[in-house]
Amino acid sequence: MLAPFAEDVFCHRTGLSTEWSSALPSTFKISFYAGALLAAIVALWLAQLWQADKQVRLHTEHFLGEIADRDWLGAGNYIAADYHDDWGHDRKEILNRLHLVLRFFASLTITPANPQVSANAPAGWWSAKVQIAGSGSEFAPEIVDRVNSVTEPFVLHWQRESWRPWDWKLVRVSNPGLEIPERGF
Image 1: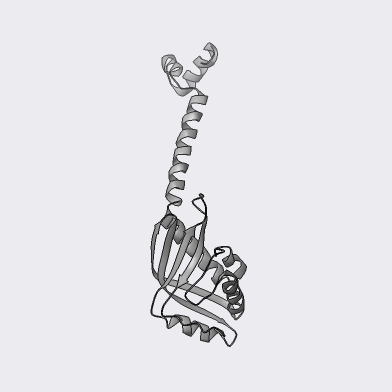
Image 2 (image 1 turned 90 degrees about the horizontal axis):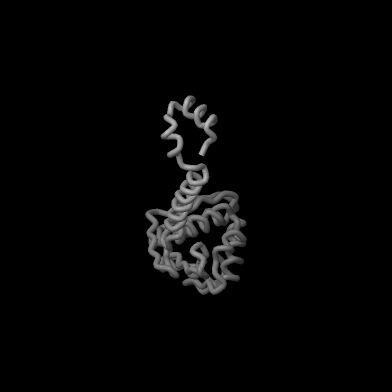
């Protein structure tokens, strides 16, 4: 409540009657409701962001982005300790292969076509036909041709590792159309 003189000045400047000014809510009350509304908006946004299918999509985009940036260590942050794939690679071997193969590229672009996502926590998958483009050493065109000739989609299998809704790791990659020899590329 304003002091009588301050109330008269406030009402005169704002054009409100003195009866109306006494009905104005306090600053604390306004701040409380504004804070509660902001907290509700943030909670709704986080609930939407942390949905399993959205996390699988985002983790896949970031994982592919790390590979396109030729950051094999960054990509390794997305790979689970118990990773395995159709070609017999475990986490250590896939990181070694990423390190080796990404050195052949000076630039690399990965473009997924019509990605599909399905997730029910704690597991989910992402599937898309992938096209790559890049330049670099004499091996880069061979790698690009081999990946781009695959007609089957790549399927990335994700697993939530803990109670935290953002803690997803890649546990498996599959593509029956891609053949990778045990030695070589």
